[in-house]
Image (cartoon, rainbow, N blue to C red; front, side, top):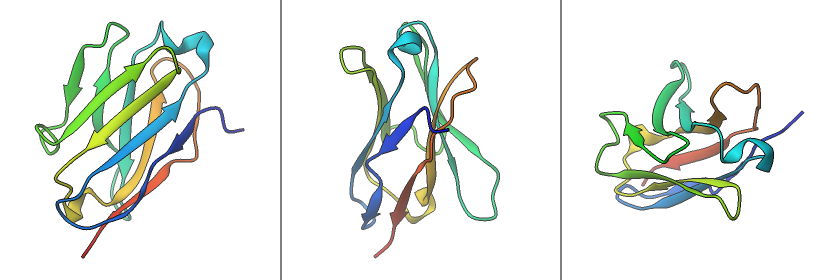
Length: 113
């Protein structure tokens, strides 16, 4: 059962940008830390960025300065703005609500020329 809805992925050239969105149930949005993970073929799932319930953020070293996580409480939506994309950013991206067993289908990001 899909409880998180991720969108915004696609095919983009190196150096391009994408913005991912994740709609989260309103009952948990304002009280939960959340984050974005990614998984490339043949690799383990990797934590990309997190946002605490008071909007403190943490980023993986590989995306610092290029990606920005943010949250819109009016829309119950978590975002990941991705700039200066690289081929190594290619993966399926998932959002997660910490402490909750909520799942989404993920969104594919492919960076290729």
